Each structure stands twice: as C-alpha cells, then as structure tokens.
Length: 92
Image 1 (cartoon, rainbow, N blue to C red):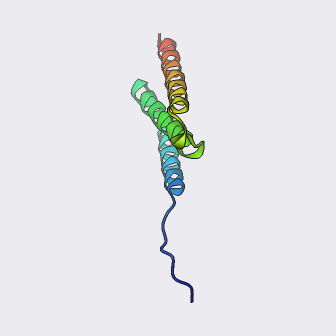
Image 2 (cartoon, rainbow, N blue to C red; image 1 turned 135 degrees about the vertical axis):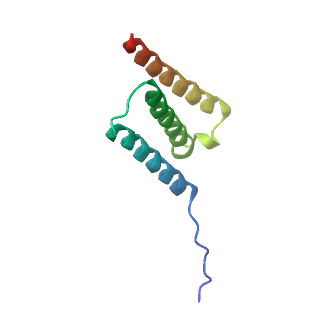
Image 3 (cartoon, rainbow, N blue to C red; image 1 turned 30 degrees about the vertical axis):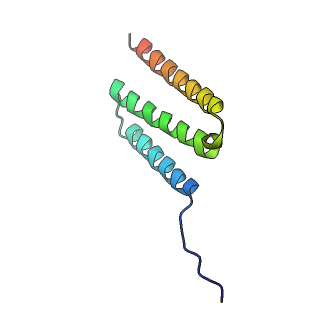
C-alpha cells in the first residue's frame, strides 16, 4: 500500500484563480456599463495588478534578478501612466 500524499493547491493554481476572479470583476464592471474617471482608474489598477502577477509567477520574474524585476516594473508603470494620460487628454 502506498502512503497517502496530502492534497495541496499549487501556488500557480491560486494565482490563476485570482487572475480569473479579477477578470470577472472587470467584465462585470464593463457589463454593468459603469464609466467615468474613477471606474477607469479602478479597472486600470486591476490590469496593473494582473500584469504584475503574470510577470512574477508565469514569466518567472519572481526568481529573477533585481534588474529584470525593475525593468518590468518601470515598463508597467510607464504604460499605465501613458494610458491614464491619454484618457485624461481625451476628456478635455
């Protein structure tokens, strides 16, 4: 008889479930027809968090050197800032 191995959930499965939940939240916001600057910032913040999670866990940057993590963080902040800038520029 083989010994019983304890069941556990792998970290990547938990991350995937969080990503799916956040995707569901953004879908629900869009489906409800919500809009405005606060909603845009909330959806963009969710996208930023999802991007960081994907980069850290699925692209392997969690175990990479500080330089690679910093390059990705700067890139994500830059892209997010440009989206916010374009949105507010369009409001005027």
